[in-house]
Structure formats: structure tokens, C-alpha cells
Amino acid sequence: MLFRSDGLLRGSREERSRAVLSLRDAEWNLATLLDLHCGLLDHAEDVRVSAMNALQEIAKRTPKPIKITPVMLLSDFLFSFTASSRVAVYIFQFLVQLDTPEAHQAMERALLRVQRNEDFSAFVGILQHANRLEVLRRLELATLSKTKAAVVRSALHSGNYGDR
Image 1 (cartoon, rainbow, N blue to C red):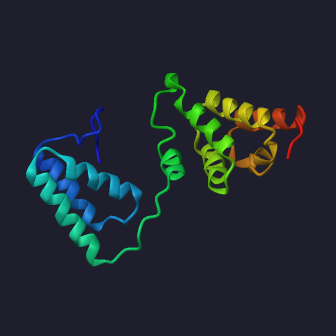
Image 2: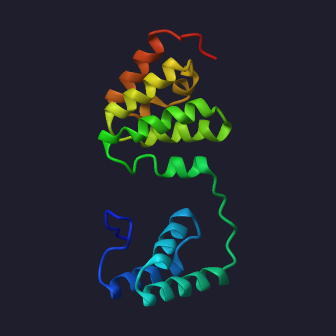
């Protein structure tokens, strides 16, 4: 689905209605829920009706409930902001400080999903400062770019800062 910068659906009313209705065949997950939510908030009634129709079709399949936690949302939307906002770095630091099993998983996902080398380096620096190098040790360096793998190697080589 295409969104405008304000988070609303993009396109004509007919296009928005078709896009929302097409969700009837989608897997029931957070992305589908959020897309349907946008349809339900649309100013055009026929788009909202399409969202309700799609929800009815999904309900017929009796999908499992979606488990949604704040950490999941933070993780899913971590890279939805401009680089200059530094939101990704701020949220990554929050996840490190939160120090829960779910936050640990979110940190590892972030390290594998991050696109910008600058953000990756900042994430590694946060882990170093927090004495969390074990997170870096669990990364498979072969799955990282050469630049990111070098950053990890350098961090691991520079010392453990009292690593846990």
C-alpha cells in the first residue's frame, strides 16, 4: 500500500478502496492490521466500508490473535525516520537499556536490518559503552557487509569493557 507523508493512503478513492479490499487475502499480521487501520480512518466512506469487508473476510479464516507489544512496535518502525532525526540510534539505545529478552531480540534484528553504516557504527558504540559485546559475538559476520563486519571485529578486538 502506498502512503502519503501524513500516513494516510495515497491515490484516488477507487484506488484506495481496491487497495484496502485486497487485504482480505493478506496474512493476518501487524502490517495488515495497520494497513486496515489506515483504511478504517480514511475520510471516504467507501474506503472504510472496504476495510470492514476485508476484515470480515479475514475473520472467516479465524486467524490467530496478533501479539503486539511496545517493543515490537519500536522494532518494526525503528527505521521509519530520517537519518538526521537520529531516532533509530535513540531507540536502539533505549532497547539496550531496557535489557529484556524481547529487547535483546529487537537489538539483534536491528543490527541485521540497519542500512546505513553510520547507524550500524553508532549501534555498535552503544553496545560497547553498555558492556554488551556478547550481542556482537552472536552476529554471523558472513551475513554482514565488509564494512559492518570490520566495525564488529574492531569493537570485539578493542576490548570487552567488562563484558557480561
